[in-house]
Length: 168
Image (cartoon, rainbow, N blue to C red; front, side, top):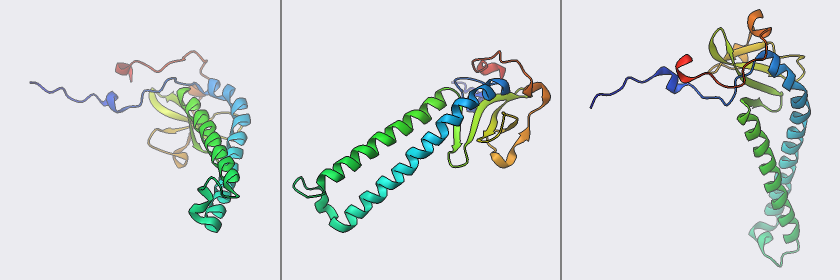
């Protein structure tokens, strides 16, 4: 049985969408509304966790007993934790299905899959920046950000899907 040489493109992610800088910039307004909401959920998750830790530290395993005076509080905190966690996971998963990666919620760092000089890259944006104007390699990070070339930055929003495997 002959073995097939591995195709380099098999190692590349297959994003659901490639963004142009213009398309990504158009998406910023919604992200400027979403990111603070997500941060608020994370803050509340920390508060809920702290409350649960205090209950557990004070009462131990007894707090889980149905006849315990703080049992209802524990149930409410557990339900809130599950609800916030689910909402946060759904929001991040929704972004990923769009080809958007949330890299750092605290700083509002977001990457969009895109192309720069024919290479699959992350178009990089941070909360507070007026537009998407930087990129970095998929295996690089914020420190590897480079300005987009004028051709990429000014590209018309005409691509909605990832290129075929063979065209990468």
